[in-house]
Length: 108
Length: 112
Image (cartoon, rainbow over all chains, first blue to last red; front, side, top):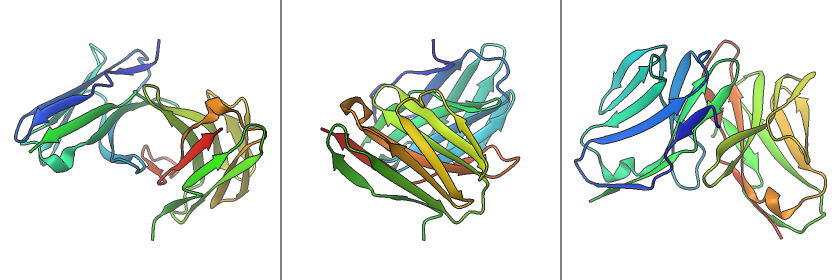
């Protein structure tokens, strides 16, 4: 079992929809949780990170961590075609562990 | 200019050949990483280095070796390439005490 599990999708939604991306993890030692965005033929770039449980909002993006259920979420409001990318969740304890990535397409 | 650069960006090689992928960074970070990315498997750590004299194996180091020539340079070698090493390879850096890793643009490797 991978330490961080993520549904690889693909996920396709219409423009303007609310997108929910989710991951689960198994290691209770993880303290920091991140979301990376990767455009086609590019390296991953950090989108957001949170420490421990709670929510963090940045514009149209909200990251949520529930340590009691070991669940990580990313919500995208008013989704745009430019949000089309692969989204990778990651968790940090003594090392950074990535989920498999979810390929998201926003259709105009 | 990009903070983390990788060369080459694309490479086709044959089974049994030795190849080297190079990574350079201008971020001044001491920590550097090599990952490979495969469809459905996400990013997996090959090797990492906390400084020039510190090299550590990741979860999938077999068949690979690395060299940290300087704080800013970290190279990955495939001594004898095999087809299942066909993948997208990424270099990343991290500052001490920081949680964020910064990735290069990747090298797409095809082993025939």
